[in-house]
Length: 368
Image (tube, rainbow, N blue to C red; front, side, top):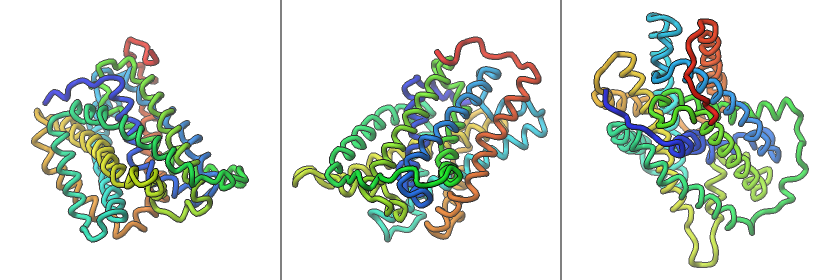
């Protein structure tokens, strides 16, 4: 099997922040605000609990099965037949979710800058670039994220400063208007997205310091939770209860950013950097699907499977939804139990099974 290289702790943090933030940053404020309006900022705060829990479970499984990915130790726990079936479903899951991510990318670009371009063009372009990254290994993807993500976070902070003139603090009040049940309902989506941290289980063996996986994962969860909370507050402070009417409220926020006549059109810069962030997320899920297939079929080289899986990924991105409305309805509905089952429920069951079978744990403190 082609050597994927080793990635540093900082690269792990950026990869995990991006795996949630690349899409959640632009989509989630509108989804949560459509349910709880001014209280939308509460949802990402509560959703961090889901992220912390998933990191705990995945790193605990990683200690029981060092040098193995999630797909590999499923067979060890469930046996060759049932284990292979479940591993196969996880490969399909990575492909399916990635198809949605690719479609989200296409819908946002179409809605903001290139409405006449067909979705197939967006899908083929992003999958082609990501396939090239996967071909060269995880280390290349991690290096791109390490280079770009600090710029993305810096630009996001600059945008918040530049839109401060549009902020009306009165739009944030009154807070806590909705009952606990409604707030929990609004939290379900961001919690499901935080659970995407589960993908760490597919590249734990690639970490230069696997004993620091839990600490780095917790940092990533806290960081993206803080970013999403600040973003929700900013969108609400600017747009008020109208935030829930936008499909991509963060992009609407970016369009307001500017200073005089010389610091304008930050939306174009944001789109460019955001596209690189999408590259990181699509590439990471594609890497998980490719490596999962390689491990399932016992192939010697992951590169021979990239092309057929890339074609399947493009097909999935185009055939799942007819339009943006259908995609948003799926994210707000079936995606939630689907994600909880495969990213939270089954890994929890596998961890309990590992404890019951008394598998030896990895020697080392994951919290260092």
